[in-house]
Length: 199
Image 1 (tube, one colour):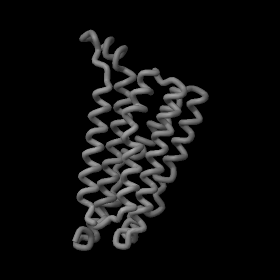
Image 2 (cartoon, helix red, strand yellow):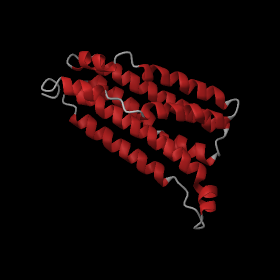
Image 3 (cartoon, one colour):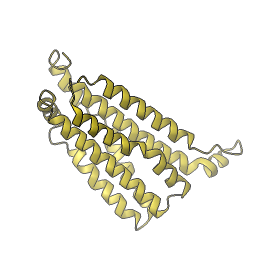
Image 4 (tube, helix red, strand yellow):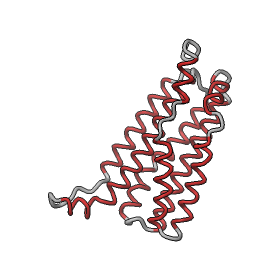
């Protein structure tokens, strides 16, 4: 089946996730920067981090499906699996915020990040098993160093939480920064293979 409905559904879910997250932010009671810091500070920082992650997944998801022409039922389920973990971001982000970065919410947030990364990897594997898409996607992805390194850094963050929960946020931010660096592999591939992909 064509990818259009899957992409439209995924885009809608991701947009809702971002909307739900921003609604969780506390509005300061006073019109001062001090009130913003005290009432919203941690929440705003965790929202920005989670927003960046959603943006990264949306970007990578969009690029991956630029290479695909058709998907089967296994890809639909793998995509739903990814959306399930991403849909938990508002909950784990809010808990992290409301607990002021306590141990258990920080670990749960890290597990959520790790589970979403694994789900994306599984979706990518399912896409690679598609007859038309697989060879192209394998060529684009290559050794996927960032994809292999990210879960290791997430695990390091989860373990650091047991030392000091705030320290766990450093690896989580590092992964986001790694993925914020523009990845031109898909654009290069599409430019080199115009007329082959998307026919």
